[in-house]
Length: 339
Image 1 (cartoon, rainbow, N blue to C red):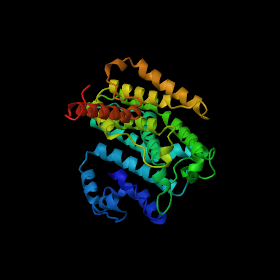
Image 2 (cartoon, helix red, strand yellow):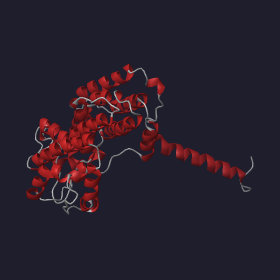
Image 3 (cartoon, rainbow, N blue to C red):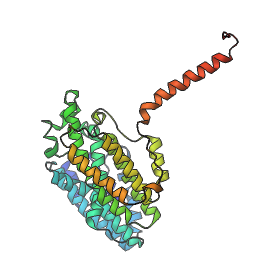
Image 4 (cartoon, rainbow, N blue to C red):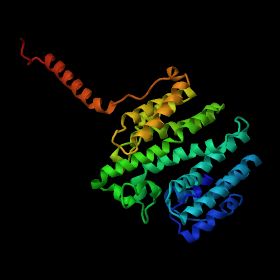
């Protein structure tokens, strides 16, 4: 809740930057109040005293971990209010501030709880970066159409290889280049998968494991849907609710995680076009992920819940079923001619 409160985009830069820099101090003050934002952001900020009160009731180790990450995140977010994402290094740095630090903070909280070893900063950071990059890719259209000003998180170093302006990718005449850029972005996100699998495989507490594993599986599934999919520039691309429910229900062990990453990586690999500018790089990363999953030795211990091309056959099967039922009903009709 503390981290979410930092993320209100409706505040002017001159007001927001000082608040972000000092936010780690405000969480200690239940009387601090700043009304801003709309909808859920407004509710959160209007009632932030509840967050502060809950924070102050935590044990010292938890408070220190949250304070440290809030301090670093606030400073980083303030930096990128005044700076655009130009290079891939900028992109990684921005994602580190808004999500990687959450991964670091959670690792510290898990360790303070006493159930987990303290994970390294690099793999903890990758856990956050993989989720954040997936969100940035999926939310292209929503961010570019943001009012009063577009939110631009795709790094210029990548998109400038394909279009003159980032917003050009939402126009139909640029579809081919837009999809190539999209595939480049997905390939960049996939480099974090190995670290994510390492992080998850080291967790011992079942509840913490599920808390961390389910979002990662949702992320690789979302990337599999987004890859080579022009609909990212037309509307919302997301996993079906039924599949999401299965992920939540069936994720309890590393066998489930390896199985899901294997299935979604296979789905993504099947969509790679040999003519794509980054095809060989994408395939190389996917082959590494698939090898890691196979080498786990547990793929045969999970159920695959991904049915390839299900959406293509479902309408056809529905039509066949309708025809069969119609014939059966007609045969039972007294007006049906006897042969």
